[in-house]
Picture (cartoon, one colour):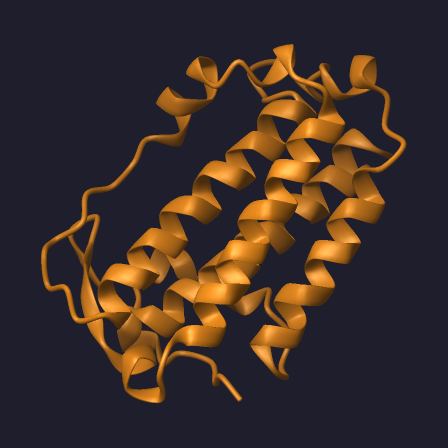
Length: 171
């Protein structure tokens, strides 16, 4: 079972995401989350998904594509660190990426399918990492981070956005 990372394995900003992950086997949680996300987003009309819940906020389509982008980044970092690559990894500016994503030009069903594919890839990676690999640390965005913290961050990030989706986009 993959255990929760210690606080010295990640930058404090990510503590919010990690705290959203319930106790138990992270692998099971990642699988369950995917079903929850697909269920929450299925049946949402594209017109509704192209609306933001407030001024300066992303549309639901943009939020889903942001979830895709972020999960890709977290998984890439997890791979590099778990495999012992000590090269410092750069940060990414989500607010720069979203306007260039063209998310609103795509069908929500397509975006959800993309998230499902990315999560399947994340799960395959998570299943391949050795116990030693989980404890390896590297540098991302100028901060020390472990491979296992990145797995928890991916899960917590998804949980964070699913909560916002339910409360603000679908309420």
